[in-house]
Length: 229
Image (cartoon, rainbow, N blue to C red; front, side, top):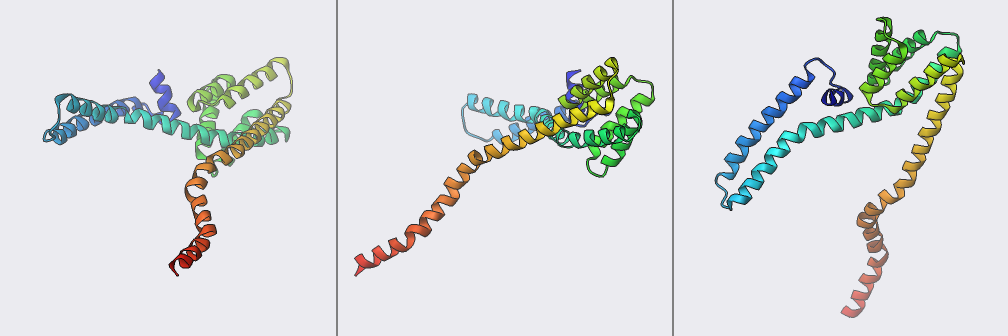
């Protein structure tokens, strides 16, 4: 179940995704074993060093698909996190304009497709589950599980509480959209504050030496010419 969840979060939700993943791992394992024996057969070194090298290469080939899945899942979650606040804004506008929540959800998924097809596909799948008889909260929880998104889980909680206490879904979406905008603004400010620290190393390695050469170079040339005379 954990592997299925990781594969789905990375975008591989087909019925044969796990079988293909395990098959690729086995193929890479066999290839790495063959490569290591071919390469290290003629290397003159101790048996322990050969063993460590063989184990390292085999482990790198065997676990590289796991690393790839983690990278794809993080990249997919980042894309989802960037576009989901816009989807909530559109959803709030549609609901406030008089559309039902299901129709608004479908309209938002279609309007977002040219911008972010991944989010549009997930919303369409959620809408399909609701049309097939699944509860709205359960369908949205499945979407949260597929995308590993805390924002969707929070939205589900807010909408369930809104239906339970009889409050307006439009007002709930408006408040939640405002919270997402504030959170995105705070993350942008945090990234901007980290930029100075990230720029320190390139400045020290590439910019400061050039500035020093430009500033001290002419004086250095003049001093050399003076002593040469």
